[in-house]
Length: 419
Image 1 (cartoon, rainbow, N blue to C red):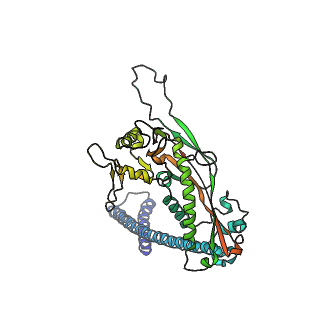
Image 2 (image 1 turned 120 degrees about the vertical axis):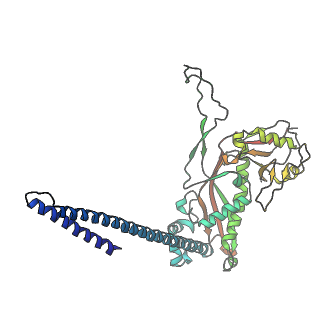
Image 3 (image 1 turned 60 degrees about the horizontal axis):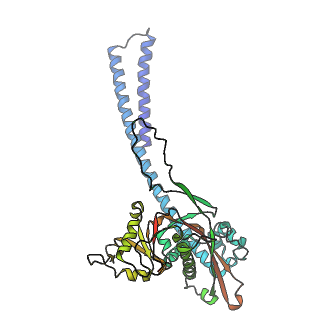
């Protein structure tokens, strides 16, 4: 392609030179006009130049297209290589982390240490010493591979409904965050008479804010027999993930549900609205659940879900509407249709109270307004010496989190009568 363009440019240069020679000859002869023969030759040269320019554009376009194809191919290949390298690095990182869990940093190969990248300094700074601060990501909070962190989150969800209901928001640091809120559902517009000022009696938007901090949770110590660790077929990471997920999940779900917010997250029940109309002390009716649903503003009902514990669900599954139809539907797994109560999905949360006097047994609303803030990734510390006499290595995990309900009208809980 380059040779063709070069040839055309040279040909165009020769034609332009011939045109200029015609002009120069006429000017040298007292600036006379072109003869008929010169005019014909000059015009022909113009036509030839136009043809050459069109060909040049065609070839340039073809060259650009070919270059685009090459660049696109190279980009795809580069992205493919990048993904392969990233996957390889992630695998190497995960394997190195597993080796660290088994044997400690001092026993890692140089290649394994390099695969940990910037985490090496964090490990050397204190992961082996128990002097490490759980409040600092730089002190080791990023030791956990991404896959390991994801598995912990899955385990957390398995042991509590709030992580499934709420909106999880991750931050890189634990700095206090003021989350802006707004509730304008009770305000309406109004008719303005002709010539009337709109500013008197104006209603401001209901702006506010909720503060999210970072409370530190620990899994407590998890001990593993060294003989078990030395078995190369044993998935040590899976064991620690499951154990920590269960421990974190149980306490955090309890707090996300009903903690009072004093030195801990503020549970969803604390700030949610209450529904008490016609609710008996020790029973539930189908109408109670329908009335609860409609007591939540339609703005939050569209994405609304019920939440209740397993015993309460057993009671609700027996309830029927006035036409004798069960209000609970088991759905269809093959079609991907979920189980529902009054046509709305539900999530089991066993930290909610049973049906009983003065208890809040069932919630409904848009739980995505409950923000669960997780800081960085879990921190895992390996304790080599503490249980050495028992031929055990111990691990302890830390997580930082906080949670708040942004809008009290988005969620309501059914409260039973006191007696």
